[in-house]
Structures are given as structure tokens and as C-alpha cells.
Length: 131
Image 1 (cartoon, rainbow, N blue to C red):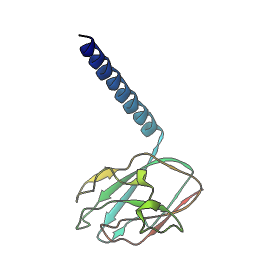
Image 2: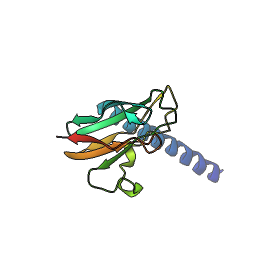
Image 3: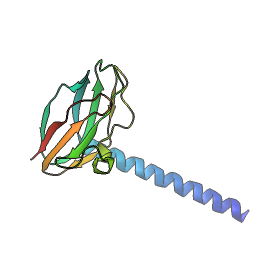
Image 4: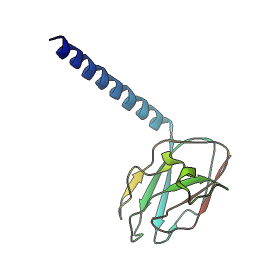
């Protein structure tokens, strides 16, 4: 009986913890601004972006790129081919199929320059400036 009570208490506290995390995530998403970017075959249609420092969610749309697409954001000057330099929270939560849009998690950006690109769609690297 004691083991059952301990197990129930554990399940109950885990559920509350997950609920608190979901609530915190929703709160962060409510404060973040959305940056909508569109990809076509081999390119982003927005070839530079300028933002203010803050929290952002990237919404990536696949507009007939011909392949599933993604999104990579890297501080300018870092080796973009090395995943260790990628800002992983900027990755879309799943690859973007043709005709759909997927979002990243919340990304906090400080002033500076970044590059963004899609390795799946073989786009060039574009500049994202944060002031």
C-alpha cells in the first residue's frame, strides 16, 4: 500500500511539473515575436533580416522548394558547417514539408550579426542583424 501511495505521489508531482513547464513555455512564446521566413527552390525570399535584441520564434514556410526544408542560425564568423556552432533553439521543431509552415522554439538574440540558411534546400547564407 505504501509503495502504491509513493508511486501515485510521484506520478502526481511529475504531472504538475510537466504542466508548469508547459505553462512556462506558453508564457515565453506569448512574449516572443514571430519572424516569418519563406523558402522557395534554393533560396529564402527574405535575403536579410534586421531585428531588435529580444525573444523570437522563427516560422519557416516551404513554398514549392522541391524538398523538405529547415532553418539554421549561427553567429556570424562561426563555422556554419559545424553543428556545435548552431543556435539549436532556432531549429524548426520538425522539417517543413512542401506547402506547410513549422516554427522554432523561442530564441533569445543579443545584438550582433548572425547568418541563416537551409542545408536541406542548399540556400546561400543570409545576414540577420540584431541591434
